[in-house]
Amino acid sequence: MQIKSATFVISNTDVSRCPNEPLPEYAFIGRSNVGKSSLINMLTERKSLAKTSGRPGKTQLINHFKINGNWFLVDLPGYGYARVSKTAKSKFQKFITSYFSQRKQLVSAFILIDIRHSPQAIDMEFMQWLGENQIPFSIVFTKADKLKPKAIERNIQAYLQAMLDDLWEETPNYFVTSSSNGTGREELLDYIDQINKQ
Ligand code: GTP
Ligand code: MG
Image (cartoon, rainbow, N blue to C red; front, side, top):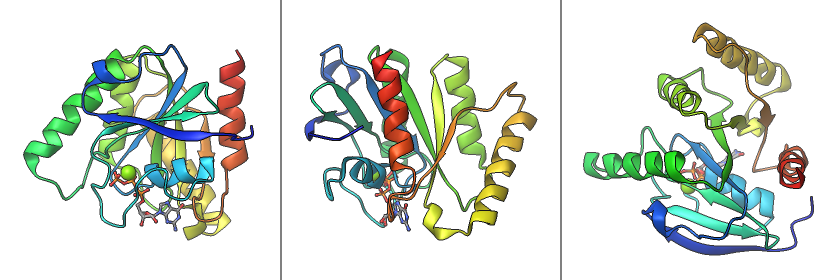
């Protein structure tokens, strides 16, 4: 898919104030600093469309970006180790939960996982919650530029095995990406394109 336009539309903390156009949308979620905002910039080839930072906790709102005038990418705050107060964390948790449970336009979530890390309870728990709420999702492994191919393969297998051990009957679709060198860009955009055409 070619990206002809990518524009920021609105930020907010209230799912009822998200754009009310009936366009398909895809949301990026995962631990703070995993690379959600960077992936939006990589996919759209817009350097600073979404704000990124080396410090966890940069994205604090639900951010809608309209792509090619007919679908949305959604950037969300991270869960996990953001250096933000407990109150801010529980506020994020509330509006992230409302977003995923109430947003009718959401077609699929992408759970971002840093390819270097071993499976983390917080991600496993979040995937369980999506499963229980019948919210479709894929996994996006990020920062693939940081590891050699063999280590990437080993970590992916460990991740999928952890899901099977966690009683998932099957493992989800997954993508391997790097926002530094563009790995996975075509695959991810083609996947979204296929769904949008259905
Ligand atoms: P929060 O908004 O805080 O939840 O973080 P985020 O998940 O949006 O992460 P962000 O995109 O801000 O990136 C965090 C840090 O990781 C930044 O320093 C990025 O430059 C770096 N980063 C993101 N993606 C990649 C990648 O694919 N490769 C490498 N090497 N660094 C990356
Ligand atoms: Mg961010």
